Length: 159
Image 1 (cartoon, helix red, strand yellow):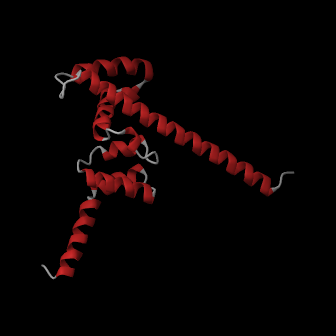
Image 2 (cartoon, helix red, strand yellow; image 1 turned 45 degrees about the horizontal axis):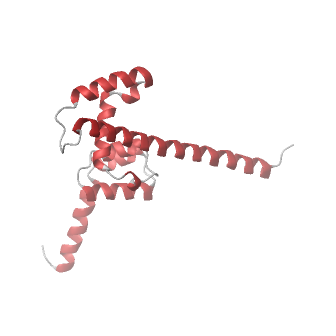
Image 3 (cartoon, helix red, strand yellow; image 1 turned 30 degrees about the vertical axis):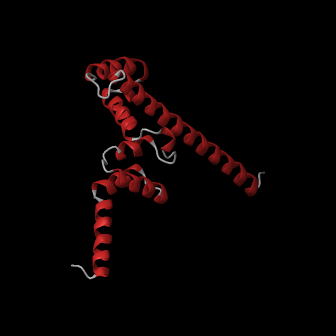
């Protein structure tokens, strides 16, 4: 017969190990997608400020990678990798608490301050990717900013 305490300790150990595995995989995949985006950008630009081509490169690359690794490397996802690299140019600045799907949602936010806000809120409030997407689509940042501005205007007496 096992004791409740023994079971509890072993259960927690297993759950912590699983959490660590998921976190490690997440960081590895973020790094892989970021590097893939970097390789594509470097190949397309070949030292120039702007790329002269790219559609064919990505399409052919997607076909070849999808044959070997499946749909995760479709043309659309490779374009996300490229955009990820452009949007977040410093890998070490990425927040490891967020998943690839979080970052894909954040790619839709063009304003850097707004994006930083959503990153912080996602982490602080443990937002799922659905919650993050809902907040972005409902213009949460803009609504909050406008309500803060309204409060500031009231304090100063300006209409």
